[in-house]
Each structure stands twice: as C-alpha cells, then as structure tokens.
Length: 330
Image 1 (spheres, rainbow, N blue to C red):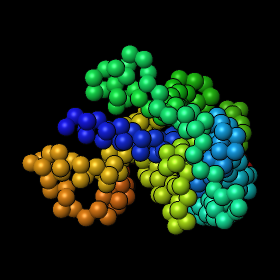
Image 2 (image 1 turned 180 degrees about the horizontal axis):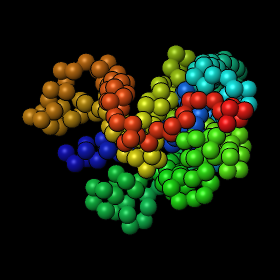
Image 3 (image 1 turned 30 degrees about the horizontal axis):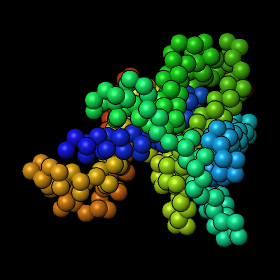
Image 4 (image 1 turned 180 degrees about the vertical axis):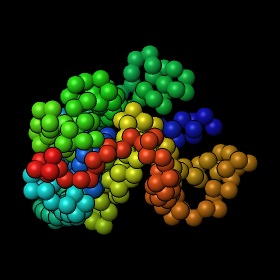
C-alpha cells in the first residue's frame, strides 16, 4: 500500500515541476507589470529547441542553456513589442502562443520526416544525466526520502529557482525596484529607475525559466513526438492561473503547483488507488478517464472564479499589470 502512495507522490512532483517553471517565470514577468499570455508558446519553443540541442550534443546542460536562451529571445520579442512599441499585451501574448506551438509542430514534423529522424532520448549519456539523483542521508528517510529527495537535477533546480526568486523579490534592492515598477512605473521612473531596462531584463529571464520547463517536459516524455499532441499540452495556460493561485509569490507557487500536479496525476493512478484501497477509493473506477484529463483545467477555472472574489487588499497582484507605460503621461 505504501508503495502505491509513494509512487503517486513521486509522480505528483514529476508532473508538477513543468508547472513550477512556467509559474515562476510568469511571476517574474508580471512583477514587472507585464502580462504575458504566451507562456504556452514560450515553453513549446524552449522545449523543442532545447531538446534538439541536448540530443545533438549529448549534454543536458547544453539543452537547458539553449532552451533558456531560445525562450529568452521570445521574451525579448514580447518586450520589444509591448514595452518599446507599446503593443497590446494580451494580443501579443496570444500571438506568441500561436507562433510557439506552430513552431513546435513545424520543427517536430520536419525532423520526423527527415531521413535522420526525430532525435530520440535513446542515448545512454543524456538519459544518465537526466536520471534520478539520490541525496545522501535525506533519501534514506522512510517514506519522505523517496518522495522528496530522489529526483532528477531539473526538479531540484526548479525549487531552487523558486526560493531564490522569492528572496530576490523580498530581500534585494533590484527585486524591490522591480516590484515598484509593477506597482507604479511612473513613480519608479521619477526615482531614477530605468523602467524599460528592468522590464526587458526580467521579461527575458522569466521567459527563459519557462523554456526550462518546456525541455523538462520533452525529456520526461522521452522525446516522443506525436503529431497531434504538443508536449506542453496546456501546461502554459495552467501556469498563468497558478500565478493567481500563488498570489504572485514564488514560494507559494511551489505548493500551488503540487496541488495541481496531484489532480493531474490522478488520471494515471485512479485505477491503482481503487484496486489497493477499494473501501475508500473504489468509486474512482466509476469516473470516466476523460474526466481526470479535464480535472486540472476544471480546477483552474474554479481558481479563477474564487480569485475574482478575493479582496484587492489581500491580493499580491501588481497594480500596473497589463498596462503599457507611457513616459510622457508621468
């Protein structure tokens, strides 16, 4: 029985990590006052670019760096259009999602139809770099150890990035300046803060973090390219909702992504739970499998409805989010 629970909780973390990358990256973007609805497309571009680079070089590090760089370029395009050219942020973000997913399919289909074929994760070198790492002593703790301290390096990296970002926003001067831009860019500008530069840098870094989540999904799925399904598979949209669920806090995002990961993992373990615990979870067998696939999106909808009822004073939402800053109006 404990084995089923342990495997389930491990899988929750595995399925949660891409959401954590996407959520934390979007939090950094929104803290600058920019609303980027292009998370799905940004993660898709990072996924396919980073995965191809990792397979071609047999290096996970190269793949992660390429995924970060490719997605950061996408962030730079978003920043140029919305910060420099003052384009509508919602339309720009949706355009990036459309382009990013299309780019994923274009490159994926091209590689699948080429004589060389799609670069699969069959090489042992790259697979070994993405293998689970047991943290000494901590991984030996009964039950907790295998669940929390036996994962691949990108799982630990995601948690580290979330914690570091929380400290950055709360304890550093650049982080506080960024928050002031998200709240009132005009006031920040009057104090000598370079609003445009801060927006560019943090939008690019946030987008780069999203890209790491994209390559994680590709590697975790073994690089299988199914012509009709994108690796990201709606995770980018859920990440946008998770920003609200986490109240714009990277630390809370860790917990929030695990909650969503739990519902997402139920579609894989519902039969196992019903078999192992028939008295408690036997009813899971009576629920259609498609419901479990839709459950994360249903929870996302509920989160958005509940967040709309939250008092503004208790929300961590930046006051100037989604609004272009015109320096002449200061």
